[in-house]
Length: 124
Image: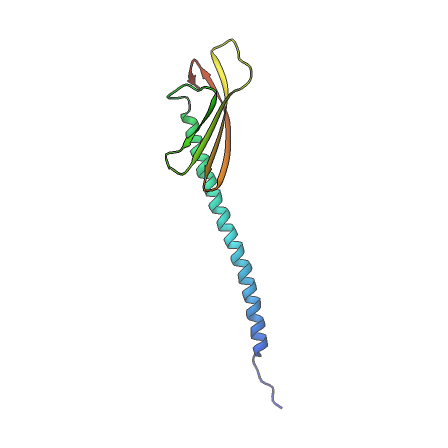
């Protein structure tokens, strides 16, 4: 009886199954990484939009307590702003406001807040 060299069909099928399993796991990890990267980029873009939006507050019209909402210039990002007096009123003309901004875009929602000091109707 002679012995044949090589692999049997069963060994080849087993090797292909292991290879397919490894590829499935690897592609899943790469896909998750891509989604997380895209989400991080969206969050960064929204943070930049929020910063730009908040820097412009109080420049054209004085800040006043209340709620406002609208859509940013990109036409896709909805915003909601709440302006609240922060702390107690002092005898000076300066007022400290708490600004709470919520941005929503493509199912993602982020909240931002900061304090803004105004003096005689002008933001500082």
